[in-house]
Image 1 (cartoon, rainbow, N blue to C red):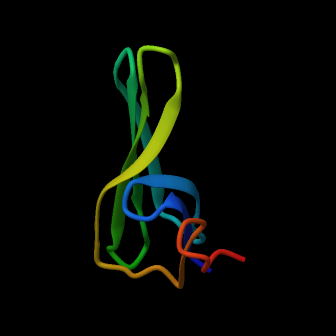
Image 2: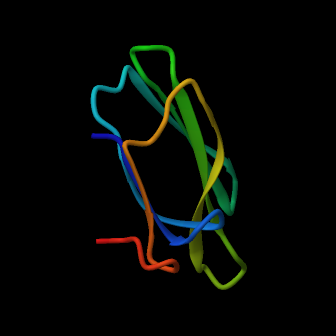
Length: 82
C-alpha cells in the first residue's frame, strides 16, 4: 500500500510509505535542503524535499508526483489520520 500522512495537509508531511519501488534517489541540494525522488515500476514518480531552517528545524514537503495515486492520503490536521 502506498500511503502519505500529512502533519498539515499540502504543507508538511509526517510520513510516506511506498512499496515495490524501482529506484530511490536522495541528494543534498545545499546546506539545508535534501531532495528525494522515487521511481515506481509502473512509471509513476514522486519527489519531495527535506528542508531545515536556520535553527535546524526540519520540514518534509512534497515537490511533485505524477503517474500514480496514493492508496491512503490522510492528515493529522483534518482528523482523517488513523
